[in-house]
Image 1 (cartoon, one colour):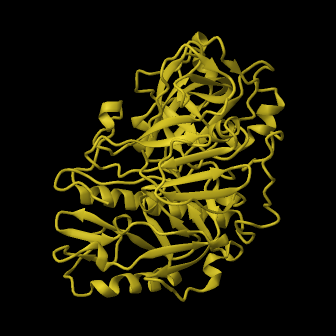
Image 2 (tube, rainbow, N blue to C red; image 1 turned 30 degrees about the vertical axis):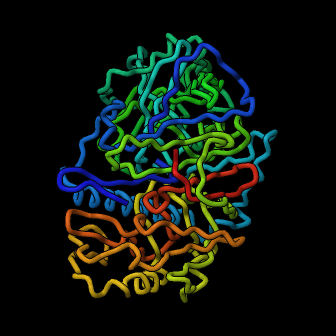
Image 3 (tube, rainbow, N blue to C red; image 1 turned 135 degrees about the vertical axis):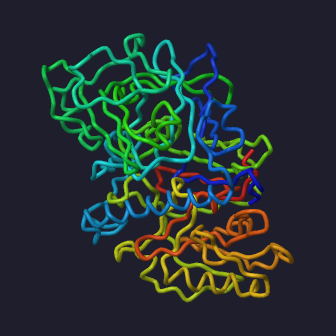
Length: 493
């Protein structure tokens, strides 16, 4: 992966991830059904050199190394929040426990994929933004992809005064959703069962001055930001691969009258719920297009005018550079929210399987593996990290070592005399025989001019995390009906 040098910068995503800018073009032809097409959303990373061209205004770290440090801090904080949440939930059941058993997602069963968020915060914000068109007539908004959240919300123009309740927060941007101007916006009554029960996992409040008053929420995020407002449903419009537009009816939308906090939320008009719950945008869009969603990530710091995409549907336009491999997805770790679990069974370096204790891959014993688009870096717990690093660095011992400089990496070096072919191949072995072999540039990265590091980080406990840098230049396809993950090398074009 080539990062910017000097005052230019470097990359990240998933699944997370996950996590872009989605452009919904104004087309007069709208379709309610998928008709075999897919919905393709353009994704722009918040730290891309081209982000400002798309209306993303985020203060960037002045140097590449400072950006890496910021991404590292974000990821560590995210992992700490996951660990805290697992402890709060007495995480002895694991990702695939019977008590947290997943229900098969059936296209006819609306309640099949409910994954409650069990605490009053999310794990932080994603790294990608999308553009949405909401309401009738449509209003455009730039929103963050929330990889651990079901709630989609936009900053909202309110005329309810003191009756809005909770607390005040300044809405700084000029793009505000005017629900009164949308003929298709429908408030959710606070007296409804939907408010009282279904939306409790998205922090609906018990406050109900009158039966027809709007259902309210107060949503807090781990980064210290929060959003409060009222629930409603409306239409979201987007483009199909055939050039026509599609409309998603009755999408749950939060109308946030109060937004408090710092950091990521300031550079957007709201949040796109990318969780796996019944009311999330991701679930609704995936079911509309056959139960599939996929993404393919390019190096976001490339100075080429490159674009990453998030696709709902079959993604027939994907250009693959190898056959798709498939493994099982795990949706049932309620303690870590809407993040994808996978059955990793081992890691090999240079064709040799490493001696890693099997309990590291066992979610029932507190281990397991997450494919997370919301994390930039890849974290391996110590029993896996040590043998992997020993095998990867053995051929590099003749290179001059450099200090990490607070980047979180243990092995950094002067790249003079370095060639990618010196590094043995790193392969992740999944259940069912699927193998993920990322290119060397995804795990040996440029930190600053004259400095490279192996971009793997040691974690003390919990699941291993495959971050979005390692995921680059691969198509990742999530089949929410069959509960499978497919992946293959791709040009991402």
